[in-house]
Image 1: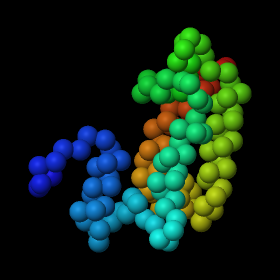
Image 2: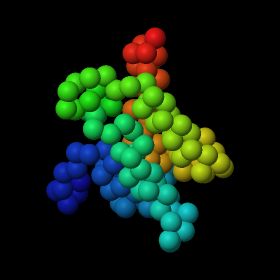
Image 3: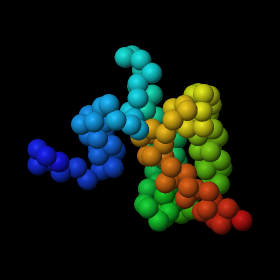
Image 4: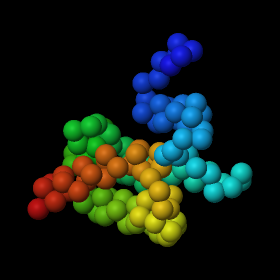
Length: 125
């Protein structure tokens, strides 16, 4: 960045881009109102929706328990998928977590949901 700061986290970079170029899209952190910030809310909700006490590694996120390495029960993942559907239903104006346009929340959730799409059928076949 011009001021010499270094950002390594993707969400920090998106937020910095939004601050530096507020008039240029896409807008990854749009606000519904001054009182509601659905993007940050859905980013925070992520950890509460995915199975608890699990490894969130890039190779197999939320598939194995931290303490003993056992496979997470299929039922835990089904709850995660149901809760994800509920989050999507909250903003019914579009296919994304916060409505009609992609936001930082979608960028945060997408890699994990994509891995779920491929890994869950293989683990519990």
